[in-house]
Length: 452
Ligand code: HEC
Ligand code: HEC
Ligand code: HEC
Ligand code: HEC
Ligand code: HEC
Ligand code: HEC
Ligand code: HEC
Ligand code: HEC
Ligand code: HEC
Image (cartoon, rainbow, N blue to C red; front, side, top):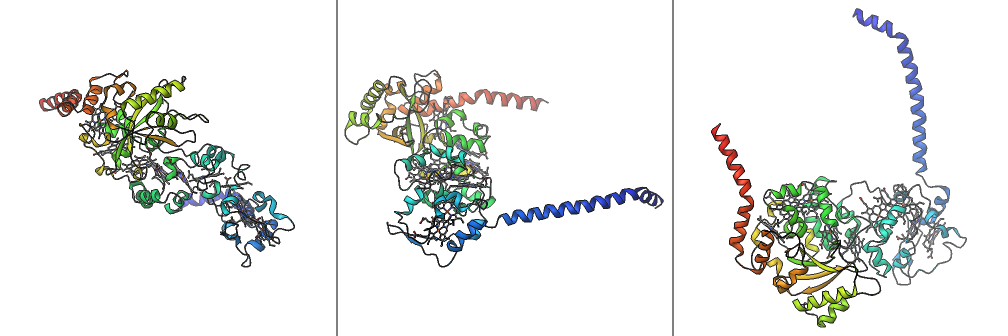
């Protein structure tokens, strides 16, 4: 108690100071508060915008009928606009031509909704240079440029009058992609990620986490999606290695969804790649080769047989002296839809025999592909006997691996597997051999433990 009095006495001047400081603080807070209030007021319409909204948010405003016969509502909700990320942007920042004298009094013809939307394609550039640059070479942007009336521009995915922060966790049905890719959205919403996203919010991927939001590429090209899987599932290689020998090699030759969409149809994709850099070849603009040359060797719509494929590759390489095409094979799903039916790990494909046996189903369907000049995949059916013909191994580098630098017993094993010769005993022998070192180590550790 004594100490307390002493302390209070000693503290008295300090106490006064504290009062003063608190007073000041209150004042500061008061001003800060009113500054905040002012900011909130700024989220009210400016006078110019108010004038627009006197018509555009009134019950009197009628929908406009386009020349294509569609009805387009002219009503803009002030409330939604003020709650949007554009609440500090003025109507005329985007609609420069809307404050003319005749505006609203004289009806201006509008061809179609799509046409009107397309006229705004460049209107976001001044403020969102980064997004515009990302979008520029995407499969969607190229389709729009080619005249597609279905591919999205900015405002198909972002309503400029109601756009909300991308940081908000919205219900998955609000993802803009769902409007157009309905079947895929439906599949996704029932798969392991869709369900996880609904249950737990942010961590499981939405469309854009695997495909990107703006720089979207054709899904079957490149390795971008697998790399996206591996940015979240960082330990995947290590986790698979426990039961899957050389998991990194398997990841290279098999797309993740091949094992994780357990009931899907699978096929071999022979990708045409550069013999030097290993990059996937892209069709030339203006002088396309793929379709013309594949038609030339076959003419009909049948799958190319072995000699036709060789003829095709030869002709292709004659016309492209700089980058010689070789083939790099990959197991993928036959349908992009099924890539969105991933299941939990207990249902994943673990049975080696599904692939490592003669006549394995995934090897019965084969396609040849390269990237089209518009960024979409070009495909040609191939007779599956091509895989078992020794002559075609020459160009299949890195899959069955004959002729590559990785000649090991195991590579031959795979060839044998494909050829259907003695595959099962050899596979077991080799897998046994692979694990022999591990087993020996385990055994000696166990022995050491028991002698202790
Ligand atoms: C950030 C840019 C932007 C701002 C700000 C903006 N708009 Fe728009 N507005 C657009 C675009 C883009 C379209 C093209 C239609 C589309 O793609 O949906 C459009 C279309 C419209 C339409 C035609 C109907 C429709 O929905 O397509 C009206 C009416 C309209 N805007 C009024 C307004 C008014 C009024 C304001 C201010 C309160 C405003 N806009 C603010 C970009 C903007
Ligand atoms: C006097 C009422 C009125 C005012 C004020 C008004 N609008 Fe309009 N606006 C209309 C009507 C009516 C239409 C439909 C005209 C038609 O059918 O062609 C329209 C159409 C539009 C369209 C659709 C494209 C077009 O040209 O048909 C846009 C965008 C638009 N207004 C933006 C604005 C903006 C921005 C402002 C404020 C600067 C504004 N309006 C002020 C009545 C008004
Ligand atoms: C196919 C749909 C789609 C199109 C087309 C699209 N966006 Fe986006 N955009 C998205 C998605 C989805 C996100 C959210 C990304 C995320 O959550 O990481 C996004 C995010 C954004 C952001 C927030 C910053 C960022 O990059 O995360 C801005 C700004 C933006 N978009 C502007 C634009 C502009 C401008 C265009 C046209 C050039 C455009 N968008 C075209 C889907 C699209
Ligand atoms: C006059 C400048 C301006 C124009 C033009 C404009 N915006 Fe914006 N936009 C902004 C501002 C300011 C924000 C607030 C957040 C920020 O700084 O990114 C914003 C935010 C956004 C966001 C949300 C970003 C986020 O981080 O959540 C999207 C999406 C967006 N705008 C899309 C568009 C689209 C699509 C267009 C063209 C139809 C467009 N904007 C045109 C100024 C503009
Ligand atoms: C977990 C990652 C992932 C998510 C999330 C995802 N996708 Fe995919 N998507 C893929 C994979 C993998 C493929 C197939 C790639 C291939 O063909 O090799 C694919 C293929 C596609 C294709 C091409 C289909 C075809 O027939 O060739 C479209 C379109 C697509 N996705 C859209 C979407 C949309 C829309 C969403 C959200 C509803 C979505 N994706 C969510 C991974 C994903
Ligand atoms: C306005 C409609 C529309 C919206 C919105 C849209 N797309 Fe697309 N998308 C298309 C069209 C049309 C194609 C061309 C191929 C087709 O018909 O499926 C396409 C193609 C694609 C492809 C390439 C398919 C292939 O050949 O491999 C992918 C991947 C894709 N979209 C993903 C997305 C994602 C992710 C979103 C959302 C961020 C999205 N799309 C939003 C219309 C749309
Ligand atoms: C050869 C088939 C196969 C391939 C290819 C494959 N997986 Fe798996 N994956 C499985 C099986 C089987 C399991 C379950 C293993 C077990 O029994 O624990 C699994 C488990 C997983 C798990 C759960 C891990 C854990 O232990 O919790 C994730 C995540 C996963 N895989 C992601 C991937 C990704 C990402 C890829 C592509 C880079 C991939 N997988 C490629 C078959 C495969
Ligand atoms: C944005 C991060 C993200 C991306 C990208 C992503 N995943 Fe996932 N994934 C998750 C989360 C979160 C879960 C649920 C929690 C868990 O099991 O790890 C999950 C679950 C899984 C599971 C179920 C694992 C189990 O324990 O049963 C598999 C299999 C899987 N993902 C495979 C993939 C594949 C294949 C891809 C690429 C096509 C991919 N993921 C892309 C985050 C991601
Ligand atoms: C979905 C099909 C698939 C499944 C399931 C699968 N593999 Fe493979 N495996 C392949 C393919 C394709 C290759 C060829 C990789 C290459 O050479 O590019 C391969 C390669 C191998 C190799 C050679 C590795 C090297 O170092 O050269 C071994 C060994 C092997 N697999 C064993 C197994 C075992 C054991 C299992 C089961 C636990 C299994 N695989 C499951 C498709 C599969």
